[in-house]
Structures are given as structure tokens and as C-alpha cells.
Amino acid sequence: MKGLVKVPATSANLGAGFDVFGIALEFFNVVEFDTKTDGWHFENEGDYSHQIKDYSLFEKVFNEFQRLTKIKIPEVKIVQKCNIPVSRGLGSSAAVIVSATIIANQLTGRPLEEAEMIKFAVDIEGHPDNVVPAFTGGLVVSYFNDQMLEYEVFKEIDFGELVFAIPNFQLSTEKMRKVLPKTVKREDAVLNLKNATQFLAKISHGKYKEALKYTLDELHQKYRINSSRKMKKFVDSILSKKPEIFFLSGSGPTVCTDISDLDDIPYLEKIIKTKISKTGASLELFT
Image (cartoon, rainbow, N blue to C red; front, side):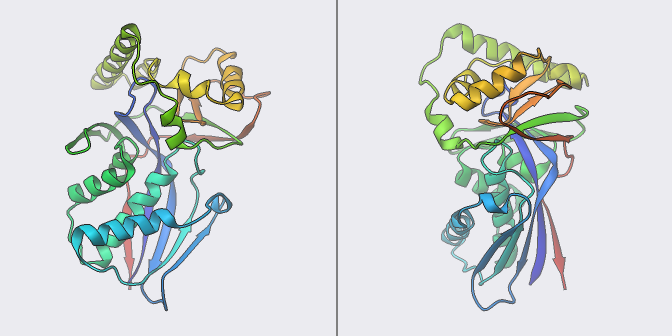
């Protein structure tokens, strides 16, 4: 069996929607797989292939899938074209988890329905805000308490062009979670609640660009920004240009903003201008 899986990049949190909001973006990792092989083979190619140190995440998904389904996955050759920057807050890990889940399910006779695949992938990732939009596309509002997963997908959202400023350094999502406090001030929690509800209120009335003005957050972004000297300098430079829209993509270090002047920003490596993808992960089989 031979095929190809495309999985979109994703941006999670959107500021005030910490661990709840996520969007799929219009650029994709592409993973080719082929069971005509003499053993297990993993390869990476593309712009960010040099940033991937091993294939342990693919292996983890395959092992957990076999444990769950009790079905052995045949040996397969995997070639991943890496178009999503690694450890930059754009869902590179989620893309691996989703593509590996889809491939494992296909190679074992599709024992899991789509909802079961999504729940399996969320269990691997630990939170749904990247994984679910990678599967579904669009804007996703999700709920997960380590057991129950619920989500709503908004497919027709159009924020227009989104500008993601990507720095030349990486931040680990796991490490960025460790810098978050266990308790927060009530006024900080209330501010996030106000912004998250206003965001959804604007979405519900089709005021998509207005919604992006309600991404101000006090629960996670300031802790992540202040955790790294480079990160603080990078963000402070962007904020000095007084953007109307600003939020970390995931746990950072990538930032989504609406400023047009991106000159003289320290550590800036690349700008990606993109839109929300209405399509999520896709599978194509070849004869």
C-alpha cells in the first residue's frame, strides 16, 4: 500500500483561548508512506528537515496504536516533507501525530472511526487545541479533561491574511508549560473570560476581523514571554510598533500580528503570510 497524507500547520490558544481555541493554517506537512519496503524506514526532507533530531514521535504513535487496537502495523517507509517550522508554536508535533495516526489506521484496515482517531491523537499530544484543527480544518473550540473530549468546528471563518513572525530560535512546548503558575489572580482570569467570550460573540455574528482584537491574555503569554531573554526582546520589539492584533502562536516563540513594518526586529528569521485552512488532514492512496 502506498499513499500520501497532508496535515496543516496549526496555531493554538489565540491569546485568551488558552488550551481551548485553535486554527488550521494554509501550509502543510506532506507525508508519503509505502509498505513496499525491506523494513521500517523514516526520512525527512524539505525546509525544516534539519531541525528534526529523531523519529521517536512517529514510533510512539505506532506503538500506542498497536497497543490500543491489538493490530500489528506492517513495516512501512515514511518520508515526511517538513514545511512547518519545528518547535516554533505552529503545530509541527501535532502534524506528526495526526499523520502517523491516519497512516496507522489505514495500514491496519481502518479499525478506528474519525472521532476515535482524533481522541487517540489528543491522548498522545495531551491537549486538543493543535490536534483537532489539524484533523478538521477551520477554527476549533475544544474541551478536554484527560478523559472526555468535545469540540465544535467553525469551517467558514475568514480572518483574511494572517502574518506570523517566526524567530530564529526554538522553544519547547513542554518547557513553556512548566513556566506557567499554578494559580492566577482573579482579575487575570476574569480578563481572559471576557476576551474569550467576546471573541466567540464576534465570530457568531460573522465579525471575524473584529474577533482578533479580543486576544489579550493574562494567563499564559506573559510568563512564556518573560521566560527567555531572546523571546522578551523579540516580543517587545513587535509590541513597540503598537499592533492591534497580537498573540503567541501556541506557546511561542512565533507571534501572530498585524503590523506591516517588520524591519529591525531582533532574531526575526521568517515571515509567513497565510489564511485559515478550511480543510484539515487528507489521505490519498496510490495504486
